[in-house]
Image (cartoon, rainbow, N blue to C red; front, side, top):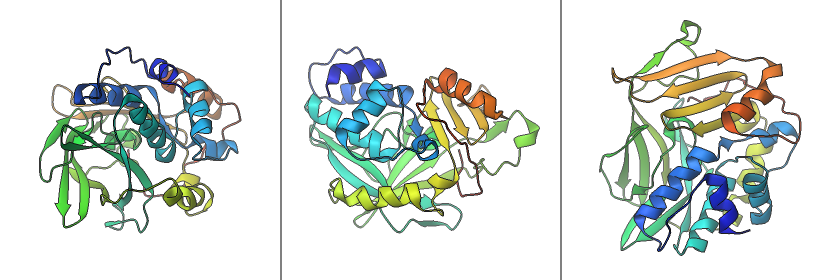
Length: 290
């Protein structure tokens, strides 16, 4: 494991002289633009681990992405190697179907303090909820980014990340009422406390998320990558190319279904993902929107 390989993987060429906010912003954005949020291992018969070496080999050396327990764990290692002092936190993802937070810390994020100011770094939530740059850990402050306006809200010891987005403009009428669409202007994404968490805190959850028949991740194959103008996503067989904030203030969604024969081609050409094992796409009914 070395930083040079990681920097090459994300296309970061510096300059890097000290662990400051500008550098953190650049590396964070390069990561989300280069490494997908994906759970394809589950549907390729592969086990997802939280072993640093295995994650590095998978994501950096094998042109894969990963989910939060891979991407954000790798990112924490990167930040430490660069001289930052990240603290790993656990967060509970908000379920918009039942309007409440999940019961367990199923999402791993990192807190970074620079010159006395704390930031939340998260390179692995994917789709329209993906932050491009770390968020300042301050309550109630609107923090505009290309995907929309993010804000963190503090209530006691609990912090909530929410986002206000734009109205979707769906080009293909067949997907106007797709369950993948979230038309609510403001949504909660996840909530967390500032209690530091180690890898052990996530091991059982990681196992359950990739094996439980009721888990979102066993019911949907997901691959998402941020682009210079928005993001791409392949959910099961549904491919979406999303362009943020067109000239009329909409997010434009170009959605289509692809065939089994085209899945590997789309993964390679649109996400730069090469799979060693055969993917079995799946898109069962579950509370998931892009």
